[in-house]
Amino acid sequence: MCDTFVVLPSSTADGSLIFGKNSDREPNEAQSLEYHPAARPGGGILQCTYRTVPQVKETLAVLISRPFWMWGAEMGVNEKGVAIGNEAVFTRMPVSRTADHLTGMDMLRLALERSATAEAAVECMVGLLSDYGQGGVCGYKDKRMGYHNSFLVADPAEAWLLETAGPYWAARRVTDRCSISNALTIGEDYERIHPEATAHASVKWWRKRGGAFNFSASYSDWFFTTFSGSRARQARSTACITTGVPFSLTTAVATLRDHGDGAARPDQGFLGGTICAHAANPIARNATQTTGSLVVHMKDGIVTAWATGTAAPCTAVFKPIRFEGAVLPDIGPTPGAQCESRSLWWRHEKCHRTLLQDWQTRTEGLAAERSALESEFIAQADAAGDASLIDITTDAFRRAEALTDAWRTRAAARPVEHPPGWIYRRYWEKQNRSAGMTL
Image (cartoon, rainbow, N blue to C red):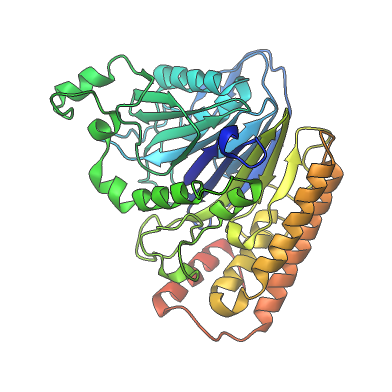
């Protein structure tokens, strides 16, 4: 499950557009932070996660975060400042798990590579949906997991929301701000819609008689939408981006780290109702946690991405990345199914799981150290103007890694004073064995 938001310049403290997303997937589903430069493939055939599509002549440079086993991406931004995040949504339309379709993540990455504006990205994804349909198995270990998709799309000037149900879709521009989770939200307020969406809902008796057509009310599946916890998370993220205080980069990061009111207890979120998610439902077949986080800050033609490159943003440091110079430093090999000490994602995950053994005790002081380091990076990025950040970015990844190692060493040295429940501990022991991780 995931959460995505955007706040337009009219509501931010510095007149910027700010986009953010947490990607929630299976605990051992490592996510890869990658930069792909602009290219001129000149056409040909492109292999996506399950199927091929015709390649275009030129592609834009993209920064993406993708589950290691798929071609498509959960979120990303391109050199033009187009940022996209997708959400799994559950609808009344049948889900195809066959390999002859594009996944929502494929459509997202294709749109980033091919679109110079948010509106163009929406048109690109609508075209891909029409030509190839959406489907395929979307889970890592859970091969029953399939879903449809919604997309929040932004560029420096505007943002769009695109929601789908099988082949049908609706879209609208965002005014002021928008937050989405794993539920359809476009009701009667669509600006564009599939030409047959209304008629199909009427034939199925999903459309309420009288009044305007409501896309969400007609196509939402009540059961899975309810038990995904999406309504609670969307309400919380909406509250986080609508505080009455001008929205800022710091606020965006805090939103992605939000655990709700009160002290954080990762072992007690049974229905996954928090924006920063930790796998806390050991009996669910598709228990998820936040495996990647991204914030994109766009102002005065400068696009700066702030990425963790890791799971659990509450225990991670956001680092600045800009489409100038080398873009990304060496952050190790692409993570895979097994814990790999050279991989940024797995090194951090070892720290995260050490903290989970006694969250109350072992996270003391962590937030202050993390925020102090991020404040330095924000000040350095601001002072750099529109110049390349590669030296700052390289230093940020190095210092964040050193801090993570210090947290893990310090946590492992502390005796467990407040252990979580037995079932929860056994769940994580199983996850660790599966990944070849020893704490």
